[in-house]
Length: 203
View 1: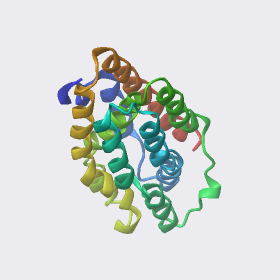
View 2: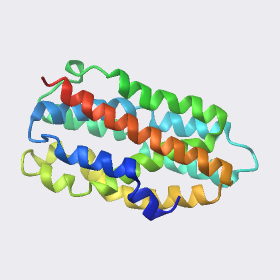
View 3: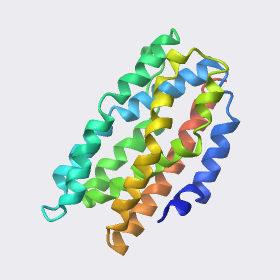
View 4: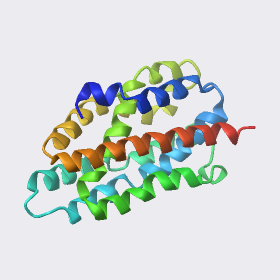
């Protein structure tokens, strides 16, 4: 998978369309999205550590990149949590959705099969941030800048992360790339269901 394929994948375009159609001016919707984001990003560094630990000793590049990525993702869930607090909301009022848990929990199973499969999950989330980079500017129309730190952080950081993930994918075997692509698609499908579930809970 190359950059253009990742950016213009059918599942990605469907998710971006759904993402943009949501009522982000509704504070309850934005708060619930932040809460679900907090839940799945709470496991980002653990996934990377797990993938690094399960990687083959011969795959030194993947191991080193996973370790570096841990430091880059460290504490991102706390940024989402703080944004929620700035909005005057409490995480206790927004329990984790089953679909959110399914999205991150399934990655640990994939990692045990082959640690590089985590790249599908990483690429999906990082590419989504790139495809919705105008999101930060739109939210500024409705919320204080102090409640947008998570979105701003990812809008600034993720373009480089997409390129790095794609470089790692190119170094994988064709069979691994095929599985990574499936993981990419599954993550987008689950994320779409998460957005739909958030919207449903508002009614």
